[in-house]
Length: 250
Image 1: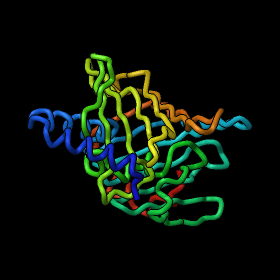
Image 2: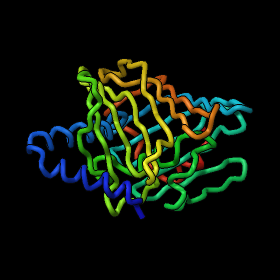
Image 3: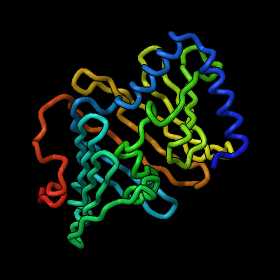
Image 4: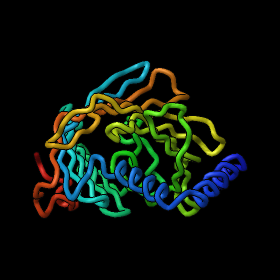
């Protein structure tokens, strides 16, 4: 259940949205939908590097990712050697992981969508985008005090399964590039922040190439994703988003 503080904030946001001009409501919906689809399209392919840091260890994963629309994602790890071949598939609301060292495909239950992906500070949901900001959250414009930025406050809808009480998204007005996401718990405390930087052109689409997730209650922990390449709206093999593909040698 949402806390009294979150319920009060939800009421304020819904009241603001209810009194907003239709043009403003359309504008915010377009912005949120754009953020959902920023790294996706009809199809997408990307090569990424994920660096995971804690006070005691550091490791870097190289991986490839394919998506189709908002409902299909396939990720496979290329390096380091001991994790190579580990793969994740999401189709609709279902998700599976394949671990080549034990040669097993394991279905991820909905209760684990907010769990860590491969020991990183990104969750399973962050990586495969099972939830949608446009569908699962009620948006309203906030106030940044900075005329060059949009601030959008996202409150989960009543039926949305999430640990977040709200998400605050900041977008640069000049090019509609997102700058940060701050995630708050149900008591209103900020729990983690994702910053986006290094915009680059990927096949005619300008995207932040660097995404850094930092848990705000765990000092010295952070995970950085770097996009090395990205391509959009190209044909993909028909069996890309299948469980058979999870076990394929690469």
